[in-house]
Image 1 (cartoon, helix red, strand yellow):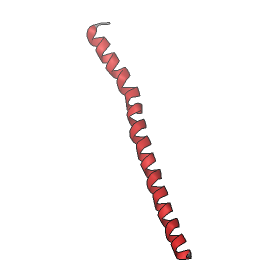
Image 2 (spheres, one colour; image 1 turned 90 degrees about the horizontal axis):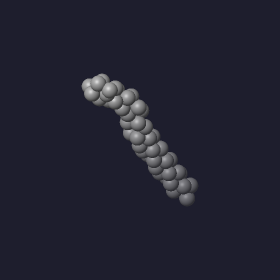
Image 3 (cartoon, helix red, strand yellow; image 1 turned 45 degrees about the vertical axis):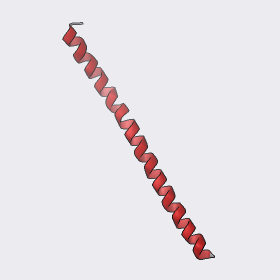
Length: 54
């Protein structure tokens, strides 16, 4: 009985770690583009307005 409980505990631990790293990867893939856009959009707007002479 204890062996089965230990196996379940190990499996639950692995599942938790997999879920945790999946959430971290998802957050990174969502947040990094937002940070990049914070720098790219002003540069793009500056380039477009200087090209138009505004």
